[in-house]
Length: 87
Image (cartoon, rainbow, N blue to C red):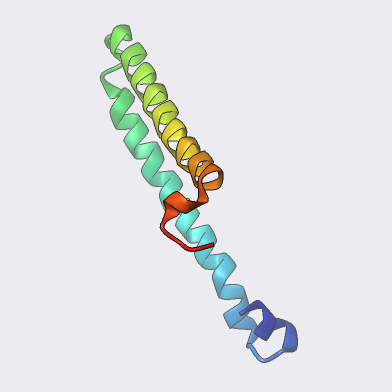
């Protein structure tokens, strides 16, 4: 699509539509995140231990996902035969 836009074969509205759709999607995701965070912290202000537990759980899950992805990537480059593809 960028090559087509560079050569001038795409109309202006087609070139502008992708950034507008991206901004709309990011706005929707940010709104969803804010609503979910508000729901998650709603009862946490009444009980501070619940807020600490929520923060520790969320951070622990993020660390676990990062470790799994990092280990997977490291193994992919360290042992290329394990990926199932011929070099």
